[in-house]
Image 1 (tube, protein in one colour):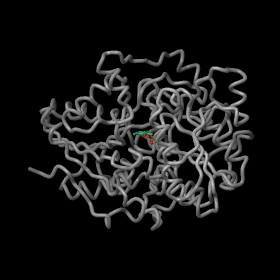
Image 2 (image 1 turned 90 degrees about the vertical axis):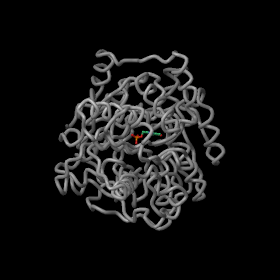
Image 3 (image 1 turned 60 degrees about the horizontal axis):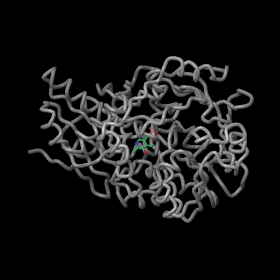
Length: 453
Ligand SMILES: *Cc1c(COP(=O)(O)O)cnc(C)c1O
């Protein structure tokens, strides 16, 4: 029987990240100043990001070296395992060969530590002493809190209020790692006070929390901002996932027909898919890449490719991306990490150019897949990751219908140990699908700024 667990040694941790901008037929359009609508230069970002990250953001170099200090910390859990899902294949009775790359082995429980560590590293190099950020369900906040603690920086996390109240465990994890956690909207910032004046009972959103963290960082010289997804340098850092997976697939003597990743802001999908898209872009390899999103926040499948703000208060530069509108408020689905209105400009451009595919699922369908996966493989997926599981299972079932031995690789971005309340809701039949109406979709898109794109 072929191997179940395909491992690499610590020496095989990649030495360089892969920058897909070097190989794209069309590179993303430039970011625009939120006030003037004019293209911004790198210097406009210098108030909140260190220059090393800004350089990565605009770089067109194909391979970017991973600093030795970052690789040293990656060794705590990298290379992450690649599994052959023998038991799932059997349960599905499919001729498909299913592989998954598991990022839940990181100390913070998801792929987000892959970028938290280099981001904090470059900030420390630049003399920054404190980082402000936002978090939704808390996965990004816990990864950044841990990275800050390891490098000796202070960390303030604006946590979307509804999650702060309903999901105490991630908040406690952040506090354990030494971070200051503030429910957002808060009275600490202009953006937060403005929202509270209009809506005193606001439960917050990722867009509002970003506004607060950016304002906090911009107003203090010792403080920078860090984002856990969307931006080019974040997608870049996540390519360690796909680069390792390529070596592991080679060890297994296989190559994927299709690579699948869940997609919130796009960095996890980018991480698993971009190194394989390299083969497609530079060697014409026939490999499909599929981004999976929730029906409740269907950015790629129903959004618009246009310039939009990254946050509610319109403080961030405008990016050309697939978006549902910066005022869009997704319903309270359990995959908190997939509830962002926009998407990575790199992922968006690739989708616009027909180089990747996208699919959306309702949450009852993803929990059904998650439970089936847990029972076969023994790993309880994060609700976000369960989107990739659903798509992989459907791909395997289609392979069965077609009688094809298709090779499927998917990214299992994190574990669901802090999401068991969502599993309980599903298991007790209380979980509802919350389809997005045409009216709500149109209302969000009507708020797009009237520039460019
Ligand atoms: C944040 C998160 C996601 C979404 O990641 P993006 O890079 O924003 O698409 C997926 N899975 C898990 C476990 C997460 O924590």
